[in-house]
Image (cartoon, rainbow, N blue to C red):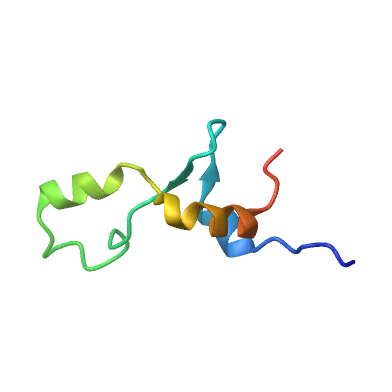
Length: 66
């Protein structure tokens, strides 16, 4: 049976933590920042976690993070 390939884009966007949670960044922080409020941009800087319904899919894409 062939090996499962990892997804390069997913590897760059997600981190699997020791506890099994998947860490992600926020969207809407790349361009057109002048019209966004300062508090909104500050909030987007922080990290977030992937929902539990999506965790299994993301972990399959990212592959082993050893």
